[in-house]
Structure formats: C-alpha cells, structure tokens
Image (cartoon, rainbow, N blue to C red; front, side, top):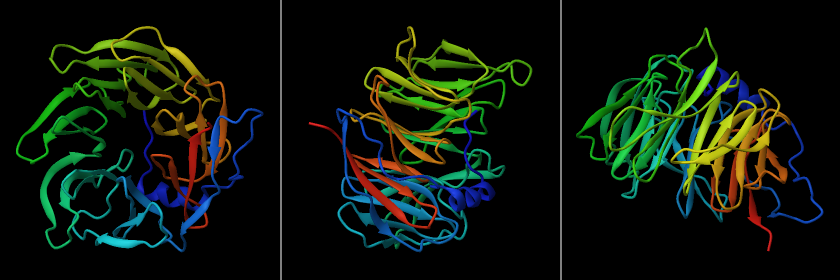
Amino acid sequence: MRYRFSRISLLFVVAVAACGDENATGTAEPTWEVGDVEEVASNIAPGGLTGVASTDDFFFLNIYGGPLMRVSHSGTQLEEVLPFHTTAFDRYELVLGGNNDVYWSNGLIGGGEPGEIRRSSLDAAVGDLWTLAGLQDPANLQIVNGFLYFTSDLQAIGRVDLNGTSFDTLHLTSTKTMAAMAVSPQGDLYFAHCPGCPTTRETKVEMLSAAGGAPVELNHRLGPATLAMRIRGNTLYVLDEDLVYSMPIGGGPITEIVELQLGDALDFVDVSEIGIFWVSSFPAFGIRVATLDGSVIENIGNGFPVHRSGALIYWFNKDRTLRRRTVRLAE
C-alpha cells in the first residue's frame, strides 16, 4: 500500500529530510540541463509543508498548522492566499481549479482520522464553496472531465462533480489495501490493491472502464507493494517499492524501467517528457530523475515534499527552506 505520512511522522520527515548532496550527478553526455539550486524562502514553520500545487505562474504551499501561501515562479516573496482553516485544519492534498479555486483534503493515508474534501475560493473573503464530509483518509485527488476523483479509507474510489452536487462511489475493494489510483482522460480508473493480504502479499493492478462492468486485472506481483501511479499519454507508469515500470493503459506486457532496492522508493513526483521523477530513501529523501527508458538516473536534490511545475522542481529542505531548480532536457 502507498504510505502517506501522518501528522506525527510528517514532523519527523521534515526534520530529517534532505541529508545528502544536492548537486546533480554528472554524465559524460548530459541528458538534462540542471540549473543552480535557488533558495526561495527560509525559516518556514517547524512542521514544514503539507499540500503543494502550482499554476503556470505560481507555486502554492500549505504550511503545517498555518496558511496556504504562494510564490511566483520567478520570485522569492511568499504571500498568504488563505488563512489556516480553524474547522478542517491542514490542507494535505491540493488540486487547483480553473476558476480561482482550490480543491483540498484534510485527511491523509496513514493519518487514522476522518476527513473531508472542500472546494474553496482563493479569494479569502468568499471562503468554502462546498464540503464533502464523512470520508476516511481521502487522497489521490484528480480532476478529469468535470469530476473530482479520489480514494477513501484505502478501499473506495469516489467522485464528486465540481459543483459539489453529485457524489458517487465507483468501486469498493474487498480489503483496505488500495492506496494508488490514477484516472485516464477518458475516465477509466486504474488502481492497485492486495485482495489476499495479509495472508498472501500479492499486489494487483486493475482497470475499471468508464463504461462500467467489472475491473480487469492488468498485472500482479508477489511481495512488493505499489505506491503510486501516473498516466502519460497511452502509458501507465507504476512505482512499486522496488521497481518503476510501465504498461499500455489498455493492458499488455510490462516494461521494467528502473530496478530499486526494496524499500528505496517513497513517492512518485511526476512523469513528463523530461523524465520520471520520484523520491528515494537512498540517498536520504533523494529527488531522482530517470530517462523514460531508465538508461540514465540522476539525483537533483534532497527533500520532501517535492513538486514539479514545468521545468521547475520545488522541494522542502531539512533546514526549513523552500528550494527550487530548473531541470530541462539537454539540447
């Protein structure tokens, strides 16, 4: 199952993250053009960051126990967007809408607490637009075709229309082992779970068509758990505890991209034409990038959480600073 940091473990993570060298490792024929590390903000509250997101112009960050803030991609001045939410508390996952609003959850996998999803205007005077309450650990928020999709209680996939008027549970697994989920542009659902756990540790990747019907198994692996998924084009990328692999979104043979030590992988960051980004345990909270075929791998920084916005990579460092650097394909 995917591990998301609880409020207690998050405090530990941000205290020890980024213990390694933040210089990119070189290659004889450079694959990426990697810029210098910039310090964007310092003396961030000890709890660190919870939710992060971005638009074309701004990087958004929620301070643990504090407000939602933003900074220009070309600047270093943090400005408050929304105050600390005294009812729902911290914003753990953020998805920015196209109407000056943000969708966010206050629960997280491993948090062990009831949660909810809210749509809030980025105009603090307007406040919350709607609330979907009564959820358990809502996570994996994704907007596709006018709906917000999410997982809940490590077992359910739900969706709510962006106006907050219609809510559906699309799938419910037999065990509470589902943490990874992705939605295709067509609305097909991809998810990983372990129906035989804890007796048989076999993780299955399945697809539920937007047209309905029963889920179809695409792949299964004994032992290592699936942590996260991303879709790019017609390809599903999967991050397991010991492997990054891909497969066609309609099913087919898997392609092993990067083999990892068991337990090395912590979280996916993103997949783009630049490469595959993830956070690793070795080096400590290393921000790794690999070519799409896995032939070249570099470490570009150390920290958590990590967010990619175009060619910019943002991360929170152990010394309570927010940092960024540019990573582009070499010409």
